[in-house]
Length: 320
Image (cartoon, rainbow, N blue to C red):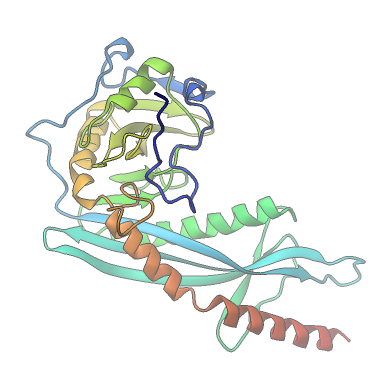
């Protein structure tokens, strides 16, 4: 009898495994070194040993972004204005320890991003948007420029709050741009690209909750150590509950393995639950809570949109 499996993520979100055909899992253009921890032909699920310990303090960093309005920047003497975006973004840090999770800090920023060097500072009664330069006027580049600002805000907060050498910092998303931070792990919930060859992909599928793959090195436009871990999950959907973790490429292999064990022990108790979070279990409880707080701190989008239109009307009257 033909059967089917329902993906555990809410259909309002992209699937955690973003491929149309599982055969695509064998395709990758990444440079891989699979024998960092054990020979590639001897890969099997890894259960951290009794000596593996979760860090006493796990710092979780995350950021959110929102485009408040599409804008046009008028340049002196130019026939056509230059497109841009007015955006709000925020980053925060949560400290997770034996006594629970505590919010450490939230910081909110707003930018008017455009390729024009004449982008103005926009002041409204509710927020000020600082001008920021993008490499070109395409929406893709405007979006990338915004994401770089979100990432930099996360880095700035993380650097300020690394109070102890044994703190482990988990950043939501790839580690790109943050590989210089000590004891820092990128946490990737959604799999857009298949990196492992079929034999090693089968090891990912064979993971049980609390297990990980061996550590490997991965190089695309940048290099990092990586491993996959499975969180507690009831679904039998392909790769359900699987997240990819990333650490700096400059780590000694033994250090990377110890870090992978510590993360694999630390994550399962923080896994999201499906009746509270549509992206459970990969969307960890502290990440989900932080995202909710961050979005609240961005302010009312309708109010900010009206304020931006009012400010733009004032600019237009000033030009005439």
